[in-house]
Length: 160
Picture 1 (spheres, rainbow, N blue to C red):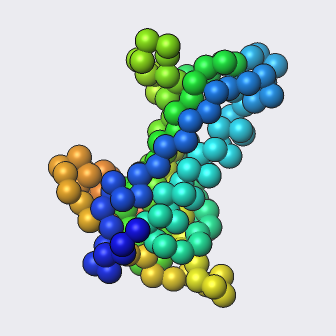
Picture 2: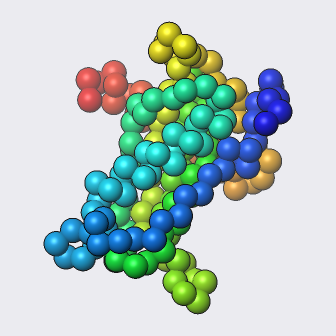
């Protein structure tokens, strides 16, 4: 990948992971375990952040994890991540999860925002490239992410 020192677009780090759900991922009610989905969400967010930053990353926050609906064994799960915001050493990634039906239709079952921190070889936070916004939708996502970022900063000040 050619690195643009002025930043990267949302599409340059967009990631999708697809899973066929098996009984090993199910809970006692034959539904996908929330913890397993959280693991996959964190993994997809990490791939997005690594692609954007060109560095190793670590998870700082999993924010606003909304379980909207269930997924069951043998369903096809599509987990999609994209960058929404960049700060100095961190970035926010939105991860949306869909069940894909045999007819090609989709149903969203989860949405989460994950804050990843870029780290250097010494495991110290390092600068993140800016996010280049190309659409009105990306600009709106950025504005909402900036508001979430301010709320997270306020929580840290309050000792949350």
